[in-house]
Length: 90
Ligand SMILES: [Zn+2]
Image (cartoon, rainbow, N blue to C red; front, side, top):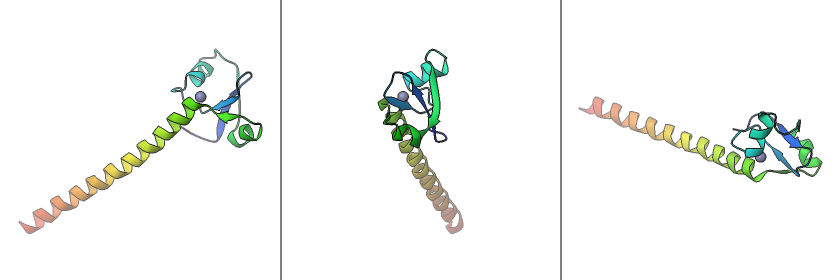
């Protein structure tokens, strides 16, 4: 999950990471195995860091999931209206 606009950067890496332990690097950072610094995402980009591919993948999946939930809610609402219409008609 991608929350806030702060990201992790490590001393050696060229990538920045979201606070999501689905990323192996973030997971290690959260467990205290890698020293990391929190900075603004915009600042990380300005410093030449690029988004880690694990984090990028998770972020895309999160967006897709949210989209999926919206569609499911609409379908549910549609089904509810049909049921209500049937009850009124019969
Ligand atoms: Zn990452």
